Length: 352
Image 1 (cartoon, rainbow, N blue to C red):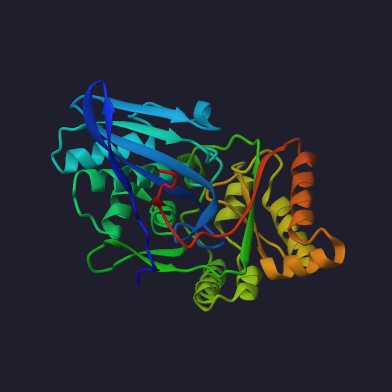
Image 2: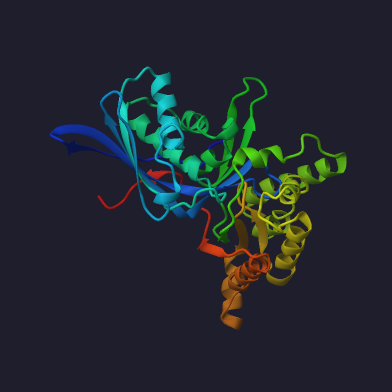
């Protein structure tokens, strides 16, 4: 089943050094993956932050990535390392194309914070190249090719950035292909992304912290919660989402105790934080992607009602609580995005 995918691209011709080169531009949403117990399965697109990208075809041998935006100094421009460059090299090689490329990235998604920057880069590169080269790839193929530039080829981040909405990734047992079920998120669901100044380990390092075997009771608990979360998104049942989303019994605790989320953030510290957020503010906390950012999920209606009573609502005190917890460990919050899930994936860039 596919959701209302919206992979649209702005196309034009730009004159550079007296030659004309076709270009395509797109805006790609950040994503939050590994939602609660849905490791490598559940992901969701975010309204904010977003990545803007422009891709121009150039003569053979030219491979250039130019960076702009808030995080331009924190992202590599090496096409052998940058996800956009890796995705383009893979695509051009696969289809026997000799073109070079110039990629301009407006880097507004903080890198290495669990918000899917590399997935957004690879999605933008593939969908722009698909249009420029008239490849006519369908949405599933675009996600597959973008995922090839991701560590271990995991598809959750790229599916959310490409397709939008809430995504369930699964492997077809017959042909072994990765498929996706995409749902529109509930309009009542809000999220605040709290980004700390913690330097996280690489995604590959954090994956090595995930246990290879799971006890039967944890498996059963995880399966039950993943099932409820999936059904709750299908029914747009925000209450059930908030009740079940925070509780991962395997991955988050192992990564926390392995130091993946910053010094002092143990599984017990994280469990206590989640419990307090649920009881005090009706806010569900998940680690976004491989961390260290926190995603605080809440009911927008309930938050608005509470603001009429205390002028603060629910999510603002919850953000302050999490920020104070970071500070108690010697960390600081460097950015907060109060936003909503995005029902659209990569879309046409406005303003031209």
